[in-house]
Image (tube, rainbow, N blue to C red):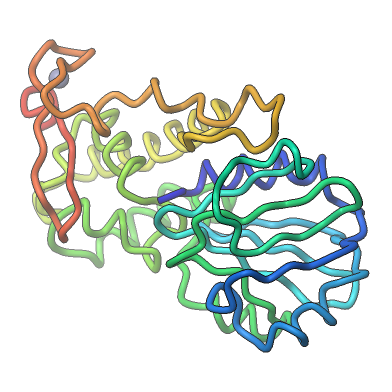
Amino acid sequence: MPELPEMENYKNLLKEKIANHLITDVQINREKSININPDLFKKTVQHQRIIDIKRRGKHLLFQLQNEQRLLLHLMLGGWMFFGTESEKPKRTIQVRLSFGQNHLYFIGLRLGYLHLYSQTQIEKKLSDLGPEPFDPEFTVNEFLKRIGAKHGRLKTTLLDQSFIAGIGNCYSAEICFQAGIKPTKDIDDINDGDRSKLYNSMKNILQEGIKNGGYMDNPLFQEDMLTGGFNNRCQVYDREGQLCNRCGSTIVTEVISSRKTFYCPNCQK
Ligand SMILES: [Zn+2]
């Protein structure tokens, strides 16, 4: 599932492509991917300019001229492609937004969605989300305060979107690896020094993810060389049975909260 760096990467690249561009056509192939009557959706979105694109947690928000917003969550298996009809990947398209000859294709939107909301509705929808990792007000002290109120496995807390918004299975594993802490560890057993390390690793790893275009498999557009660059930089995620780049031990997995969790049993304490 795309996490903060993947969505931030999409946001940055899409801004260059479609910000201030007019949506010339809207095609809904799967009604379940949207939240209102398709005719009304089309009527509200078509002939609008996208004036801004923002990210909140794992969501993207497309801000329209008419004050309405499209709220995108790709969930598991969702991705996007931007380009002409001839460049389009041979995949089933659930929703298509057109910008003249170019189109933004929403692919694999099964669990994911593209919902239309007013600003007030959006605020309500996203009100349960925790702080953004790069919010200047989310300081190390704020992190220590928040994690101090938590118990149970570290991994479960890192995945909790009301604790911090935007972290999922891949980056939680990478953050714990960099901090040298086992994701299976109970929060009560992690001292303040290690908790501060987690905060710093969270920022480092997410920043590195963004810088390298996240881990999505498919490029966003034909000449896109950035998207997916983080894929081969993962130290533990999806590396079960491979050797740790830091100590040479074998990376193992354990299931926590029904998610596969990757770590090095030797250099993560
Ligand atoms: Zn190791």
